[in-house]
Image (tube, rainbow, N blue to C red; front, side, top):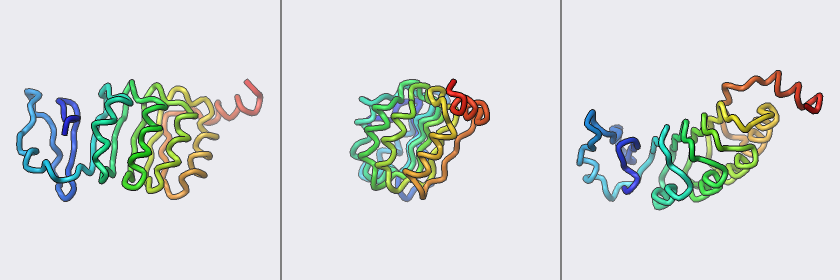
Length: 162
């Protein structure tokens, strides 16, 4: 459980309670009662997790949900590293991550069981309509959320070559 710091939250398999910090930034040590229980959900939104930090999760083979909304260091390399969760991951939120490109999204094809994907407001996505179509082709069983884009304006740029 090395990834538990004062801004990360997690939930273990079979539990309804999320482990998070209290108002003083301290964890309830009850999470040690679950040290042999797999982690099912992790919320690292708005943290500085990066590709190197992803290694702290690699033994979590039951990880179903990973929320990374607004993480400034999540990039294409990070997405490529998610292949280790190809058999378990069902939900991924990478919205508002400023370093993700359309090329990095291609790595998500390895997440065969993905059911929900949030790619809202990724600033390096210049043709969101096309990217969404490609994601739907790669992940036909997945519900894709893509808010925060001006689809008409981006499609116009594609048609006119601007």
